[in-house]
Amino acid sequence: MILEQIDKELLAMAEESDSVLKDIYQNIDDICLHNSNRVLSAFIENQVSYSDFADINGYGNYDEGRDKIEKIFASVLGCEDALVRPQIMSGTNAIYLTLSALLKHGDTMISISGAPYDSLQEMIGIIGESTQSLKAYGVKYEQIDLVNDDFDDDKIIERLKQGNVKLIEIQRSRGYSHRLSLTIAKLERIIKKIKEVAPEVIIMVDNCYGELVEKLEPGHIGADVVVGSLMKNLGGGIASTGGYVAGNADLIHMVAERLTAPGIGKDLGANFNLNNSFFKGIFMAPSAVKSALKTAVFTAYMLEKLGYKNVSPAYNEERTDIIQTLELGTKENLVNFTQGIQATSPIDSFVRVLPAPMPGYPFDEVMAAGSFTQGSTIELSADAPVVEPYTLYMQGGLSLEYGKLSILLALTNMNK
Ligand SMILES: *Cc1c(COP(=O)(O)O)cnc(C)c1O
Image (cartoon, rainbow, N blue to C red; front, side, top):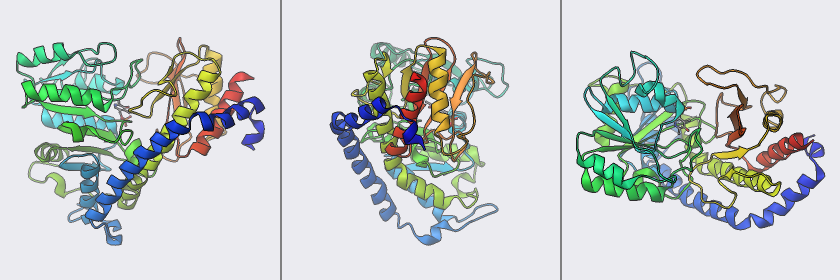
């Protein structure tokens, strides 16, 4: 039994935490209620029915369930339309699909949140020699770095005034960098300024890990297209694959035509009997995100109490995604903590985590991922490059109770 293995002092600290964290948990509950209202209202508005779960195979023509899923996603994300498909196989695939559809030879895209997420680098052509990168297709890439974890407004506006920009990419979540994630308030400020000087520029937000963490989504504050994975927040821990692109109807039409073919667009594509789990996934997503956030807050609190520095976000800091980074200081701590998370996973608990090389990564990696869906990170998971200062990236957790058991066992493992 797990509880019996947990250090008694840690258990006492965990019990104390509930009263200290009460107001923070309450705020997370408020956001969950707000977002649940939006999700449930979208189900009712779209008259979801048992018959929408029908398994349509082959070409997937006339799948009303699929159409309703896409209307619900659009509505929840504050957008006109959406594409939610098992044929979009990950967040990276969704981003590549979107950029490929919206950018043509000679166009320029600018990342205004610094270097994009690792898996985008080769796709854009920042690194590597792929013949399929955007660069190989004649798309130009520019980057404007963040200043003090916020947008460099002046530089961005100055660049836009020079013209010849097709698309701006904003990554809301920190990814594997040491910056803070970008809140909706910061996004709203910069998007407003961009629209004033360059209303024709397409604003795309990589929304991975940010969905339903705040009351508003990028679509509510002017983003033209937003992209994410169903192995993260909006899959609710239930969708077993898939990705989404949501945004202005004309842009979604272009992305759909890129996915299927010009003239076909959204009309085709079998959902392989996944409609039920896509519906149920977004239905449960506000609550899954709530649990992931509380697990992150709890973890941050425990580590700060134990004297660890550079816990980010701090337990009482504002959040806009579900990522928690923990600087564990030594290789031994990192490995022991990660092993503790793996050992308390419902799946593959018996697997012993060891540092190992990973294709595409410069350092050995440790990874704890005992999830029902392979690679799912709305389920409790953690990974890190094994390099100083031994920072672990942790996210997910489908219930606070399971999260507490895992974190307390991991801490026990680390301190022994
Ligand atoms: C996870 C993630 C991606 C890529 O999504 P995958 O589903 O892992 O391909 C892109 N951007 C950010 C910020 C992410 O967190």
